[in-house]
Length: 291
Image (tube, rainbow, N blue to C red; front, side, top):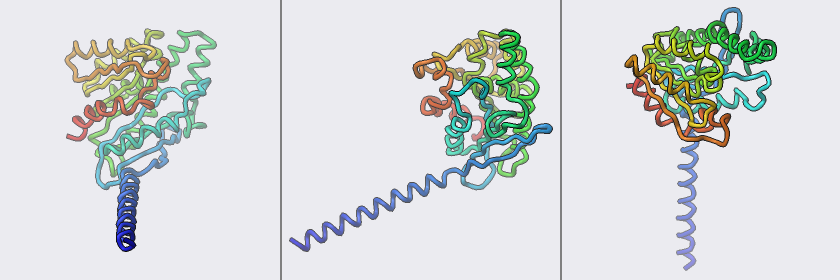
């Protein structure tokens, strides 16, 4: 009986060791899936912007995503750009993409480099009301903010680990509107995915509506538009979808069911609902950038 107990105990110990070995190997493999984030510097005119870059751990040339973040700063104390982009970088890198989250002028790691567009828009709202804010918003989208993103794309194209013929842009909120203008300006991009683009401002700004409709008319690459049903507004998705249908342009519109308990939570589906959208988004991107 003692010998049997000893044999059983030895077997149990062996199983524990094997289990621990598999567990440690799993951790090791997961840790090797991606590299980063690395902090990178991107020159935009006279400014030196910072970004975070994630990449697959393997060697070679990869398809790349540049992320166009939304508005941060000013009176907004609910959202942390560093935390939010850090939810996205690993998701894209584990799927085999280099992911660059460039902080545009005045935002997060790029504070002290130029003026934050959120502050400019808030000041305009206080001084000249909604129309004043709308004017500043459009001016920023077409000038400084556009320039920063173009600089980020140029940075990616120079990297030796990037297949510069396979770059796409993903944008959120204000950055989603900006992503459409960037895609209009940079026809060599392969795809654009926008989350909640214009969701907050669309119903408040005829200037933005006109400009985004004009942009999608000029974009030849495939576009994916995403909203949660309870976003501030899903009108931009439906209107832009209609425009592209009329033009027979390749595009996808996804309106997901209600997310969260508020329009703000729904507007930020991109960060808090990755399990909801990632299968659809990577199917869209992989067909264009990988196959």
